[in-house]
Image (tube, rainbow, N blue to C red):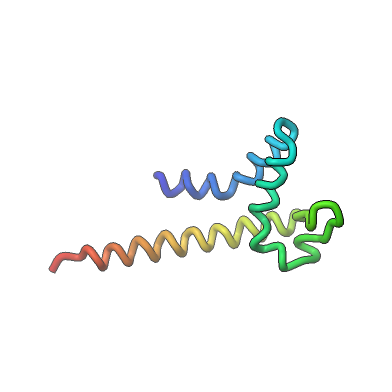
Length: 91
């Protein structure tokens, strides 16, 4: 159950920062952009350049980021799970 909660937090973190933007402003924008920064090198059409803040994630970039983060999360989860299973295996 906890694995799905963590996965949901990873996926909905940008929505949380986006909703906080009206409340706290620039720190929420920094958190929002920091979420997308590892994939921003892809550029157009996923992350178009913006002269004010560097880049803005388009809808395609938002979906691509969610897919890539999901794949990475589940690969790490199952890899860690099976590595520990083999490590603690009792003969």
